[in-house]
Image (tube, rainbow, N blue to C red; front, side, top):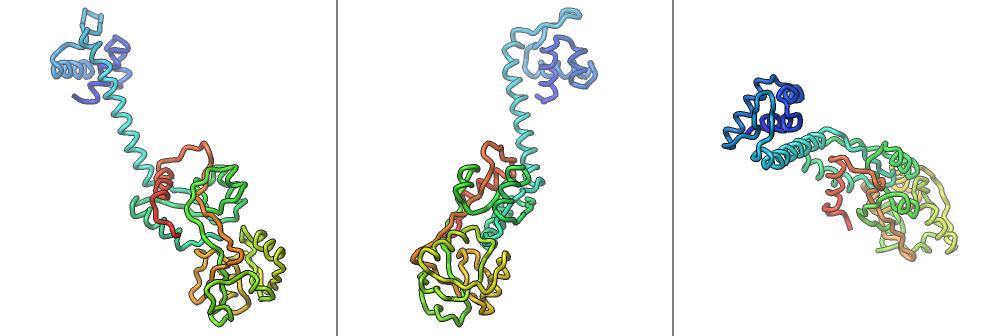
Length: 292
């Protein structure tokens, strides 16, 4: 039984005319009738009664029609799955990443994902939170990895990945290097490197003000690499998410009293259907062993 033969039978059953059925199937009429006769021979009974120019479905043909339609539908579904698999390999995933997200741990996830889906293409765009949200709404990004705040939780679908503490980073010779953790009050009066891109900067500064902790900003930058380089150079200390510290030589200690944490998530548009590649990535985020 060939798929072409099934198509010939279904088209003929619809039109009850060999000529119209052949036109629909884009074959010659002799080829169509030959294919139908071959199928009837294989099934052992006539699907159609031929009465001169008149064609009628036989009782056997009526009973077989739903089964043949089901076979054709299943074949179409199989082709769609195969096409989706090919698209999975060729259509880039448009991933947005908040500029303060530590790239090392995210890179480990992406590397594991790529190993499981050879040939996967990925386009990564780094930007501040407001721009990432706009791009996601405009369908310029498929997924955004970012910190969850009240606005994000209200407007988007949030798929939690991991939480991380804020730490204090300072050079190796700093007086607090021998401690296991740093209470916020111990930093009062310390030279400070201000991370302008930090999405929780206002929260941390408000806590400092409420607890009368005075910080003297000697350097300000929106770039994470510059902040870490200036801390290592001895300009001052800085507050950073623990998985964002990447520069070798920096000392980091958990910030306590109070402890500050953030939740990192994969964020998508509610109601928007995932393309096959994005769907595969979202399933992978749920099974990956994220830090913490």
